[in-house]
Image: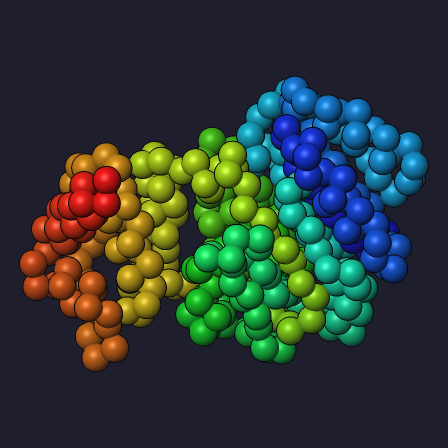
Length: 304
């Protein structure tokens, strides 16, 4: 078996059929689908079993709710393929995606991770964005992190991984944004990371999903995941674009919960830095957070 497709499921009776149908529509057949029903209390239990009865490539695991990281780890432990990919149960893939990607991996056994295009926030015109990639290879994980701005797309989905990468490296089960936390560790185990222009993942907005409901705690988990990279060979805050990403998360946390900023001051080159990064150097990070909060409150007050 060449590929294990892991689909965590939790109370997605409205979208799970759409997800499974998009996978089964692909002509590629040498795979197993592992559906991990993470304690759903809607009709997902029956829908998943229905699909498993129709297709022997589908395995369903019903378990008590343990969160997304736990569900992914359960799928990894069940996986039999040489490669693993994750598809969220409210998302879909374009027809032919798996076939195209596996043809690339069969030609390039040296690829440890293959990332493919993703349509972010699909279905919401004001937010949807196609994130495409060139056909490129990276033997230096730092090059991949910065040249593709990987810190903006640390999704578990839209990537195919060698299963061996997860030996002794599983998802953190008590943290939100567990995909951002694990990706740098996986990258450190890679010899070659590749991106391709082929295939397409449709990431739909789920208003009841973890990302849409994130609060100060969840965003702090995300920021700490990024900050843990600063003192490693993989990452650096020398990139103004990367620092802006961290700064925006910090401002969101402050707006929600206040407190002292945990992000360090920017020390890199300022020639291409955004006004926000430059302002943080002039007035300080906390003052910038306070200003941002004041502006948002003022705009909200005048819009009422």
